[in-house]
Length: 135
Image (cartoon, rainbow, N blue to C red; front, side, top):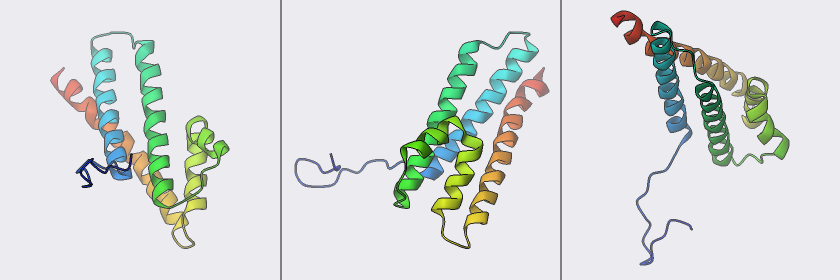
């Protein structure tokens, strides 16, 4: 479907963007920080389902970002890179950024990626604060 209604008008829908995915990433990281801190202060063992679920969710979010970004840039995704984005994220995302950006913007894109990784850790830490401050 192309989003066109039966009467020929375009549906006013929500369009997911890379920015939305990155914001969800930050929110999930803060929630994970909260959950792990809560379990730590209550001496609750971290359930394996949380480890598996968060890993799968982060993989899904990473691949969704990659898909949306490559579509927006008309970058032809190879099957190997698509798998690497999930399996070898730390190496594949910078590689993708270097390949998909024009000259002069490549290092800036990798720098932004590193900055976002730092921001993820900040979100995790901020998520832990309510638990530790109220404990």
